View 1 (tube, helix red, strand yellow):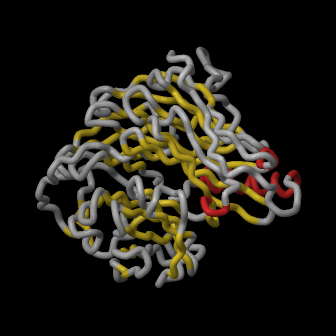
View 2: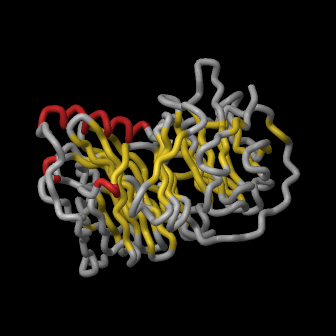
Length: 407
């Protein structure tokens, strides 16, 4: 789902680009892949979020069914098992064991209202965390389960959102929004080693607070976080400056950060960029990058073969660039991108080349989430309509979409 901050960042970049970007065709550039190296960076953190390695057998569920949930979040682990958040009534935490055809009520007892503001983090079919923010959004209650949502534990948190990721059952990170202004955002990073029962602050960049650090600068709107393990992570986003790919890496669990600078083809320094959180499959990684060209925006993927130390890509290569859309990275070979319109784009060679195919549904302007598991099984979720309903679709071939929720 596109977060409100991504939409804010895109609007800011587009408005500034209109004033600063040159008109004309794309500049010529060498198709040679480019890279950036952080191997010597000082060692002193979602979808798009890293694909977890946990693969436990799901616990058989005995939970009540929920008819026609108004889904606002989905997270599928395979073709059958998925989690969701629904916003109708007082809100629900949901589980599905049949690919989204039906949903079970796994809402933690006493959770109160759950909806758009709830943050869902899923490790596997059994282990998930749901953060319900307090009214001030600077604190919250975190619910955690290890049996598929049958039983939950809860604890208070010193943050109310907005990105949470667990690399295993014990280790997790939370990147909290501490205030946004034009072109900048203060954040604070928290870490847990006990599954979310307790959290400690390891970094913040608010210059008005003691012990602030600018290694992850105040400038820039942060739109994603990925940790590959308990020490190595990335924060992505955008900044209203040309030629700046917003990508920061930590190798010490988020205490300090260093900027990575993927090389840009000649002439591409004149454009503005929005990066989204990288996705990793072991050492192999994919970094989605939106480029704001004159009159249009396009999507390309930088790739890594060494766990994110180096990123390679060539956005000047027309074969590796597609119209901007929601991206779903299924595995190391299959990636899908769709804006909800008549055409869906896909790759079966790890983003080196793309094919396009017609989509059986037109979800232009209403598509909010695109998700695929390895292969060709995927889901498309729409925004809530004026009646408070959303629609979930499923495909098994990437083209034909079948509605799953009937209102």
